[in-house]
Length: 158
Length: 101
Image 1 (cartoon, each protein chain N blue to C red):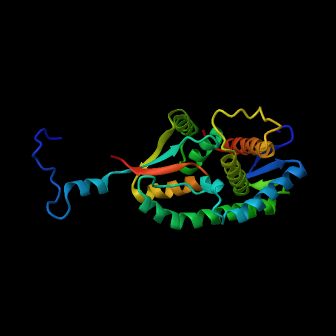
Image 2 (cartoon, each protein chain N blue to C red):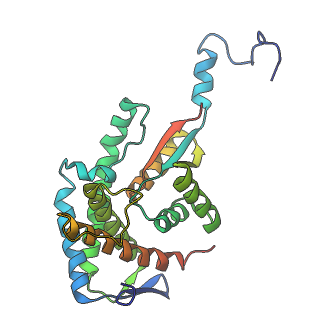
Image 3 (cartoon, one colour):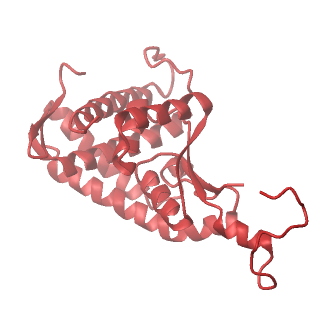
């Protein structure tokens, strides 16, 4: 993947993005699919809206009332940014952060659907597994995310 | 720190019992929990960005999360802690908060 995708800081809080066109389109499509799902009660979305107060359900309900809509708005904003910029070969740091948020969110949803565990070996995808396709997308997003994270980290102080 | 169990700690008497006063003052801890999905490099980056921690400190906390199942990444008052939990949730980290006991 790193042979096909490269994201590098180019100064002024901007990054260059080398990525095949079909992969750009694919990320835009995934983002578009996440948007309507945010309003649903699908169990696979639970990782996007975690509990803040596990010891205090009443207080947590209060947190969720405010937090959930703000989190949905934040995801929507990131999705819109990614869809508007997915063809760009140079993007601002804020834009890359939006890409990162969407890629990670979709990955969280897919990982929850797949019930991923710590012991899973990404190199062993069984082609007969009915979820093999989802698993491949999940692994692909992990590789892209790692490239984004490395690019962002290289601009931070130690 | 008195050895005398009957000696009071000087808290105002009558309005609130000592336990209530102490409970309100106890700081809150923000915890991040291990999960099998988030990448280790991603967790480190988010801790650096959200808290402004050095790479070294963020990496140490991430490794604590990974190996011990959870780590306290911040302590402070409730409002501040909740703001950080909310930010961490925005980045997809499994964060909770609890009052120190």
